[in-house]
Amino acid sequence: MKAIGFFGGTFAPIHNGHLRLAIELKEALGLDVVHVTPSARPPHRARPGISAERRLDWVRLAVGDEPGLFVDDRELRRATQGLLSYTCDSLADLKREQPDSRLFLLLGDDAANQLPSWHRWRELFELAHVVVVERPGQRSEPGAELADFLRGRKVDAACALHESPHGLWLPITVPPLAISSTRIRSLLQAGRSVRGLVPEPVIRSLTPEDVRALTIEEAAIHD
Ligand code: ATP
Image 1 (cartoon, rainbow, N blue to C red):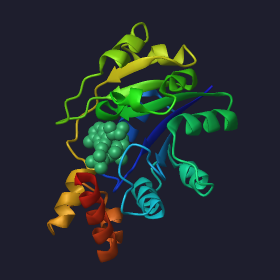
Image 2 (cartoon, rainbow, N blue to C red):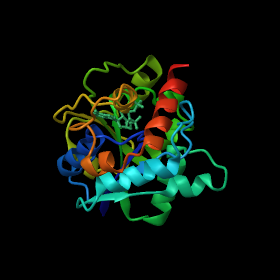
Image 3 (cartoon, rainbow, N blue to C red):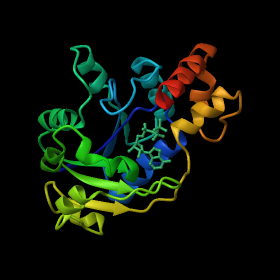
């Protein structure tokens, strides 16, 4: 049975923390592939000032030919029909496409602890296992609703996920990288270097127009 990781994000822009999460979890969980999936119209935050197409370009540049990472543009394709980017729809889509697969939803703990605010969030556990990485510098705890729901679902080893079709929650530690897209945008806004934080091909592709659009994004988020 094929093991597929699903790693979604706004990626405004993608950074090395994202890339390492995908690569470390692919290896630690023994996944065949990780789908790196930009959200076209994130339901949870101010609409990014930078276009989904541009964010997808950067994901492609960042992923390059890294074995086992696959750039998944399904949420942009869905957006052309005016639909929001709901993870449960993307996972259901993926499962329909590849019925003989086991799905692993990969999240940083800041995102994971927000799950109860996601559309049809309980259904995620009928489609996938959830794997959660501790994110440095962003302490967050599951609220009571999530903590209740997780009772009996938590496991502490990846092998348990391969023995069950879906519905389990695995907290896992990977070497931490304290990088966020917010910090990248602030550095760009201040005219500072983002070398070492963002993959080189992405840095090389940044135009003054991109920097302006990312700066608008920064303004929108803090409004
Ligand atoms: P922003 O600062 O704009 O909120 P972000 O850096 O959190 O952006 P997103 O695209 O929102 O990036 O994140 C996508 C996913 O990647 C989320 O699950 C998030 O928790 C996770 N993630 C982002 N950066 C890291 C990191 N440095 N370490 C671990 N997980 C991360």
